[in-house]
Length: 172
Image (cartoon, rainbow, N blue to C red; front, side, top):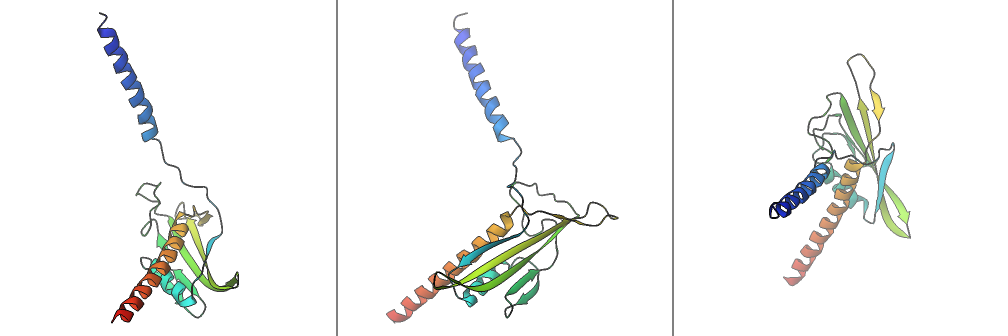
């Protein structure tokens, strides 16, 4: 009987640890706090570099407006999560959810250097049923942050490629 007691206590300890870990593993993932408004970031680049990077970052989206003279990129209406799915949401999305992105590229002076400010606005609407008007919903900001990050990385990649090409031309 004395041998059975340590075995039972070890089993209870393992069951308790698995039970506590299981509760943490299967809890619902919550998204970040929502907000209304635009996201913005300043890049130290030329307007042409920022414009090319913005077009590459929005390559997967259906564009409705692409005006380089005014510095505006605007997507067509996107239904549900056809282009980008937040990591905390299931793949199934509401059929009544639509959004579109508006990106503005603006020249600014920052710390006596040439800089470009990129403003990104996500307008999200949800239509609950066929008869009601759509209502505006706040954005979680993750898609905007991902796009702005991609723009910054595209600028870095373009500069690295130009530097490598220059070095290659000098070696010849």
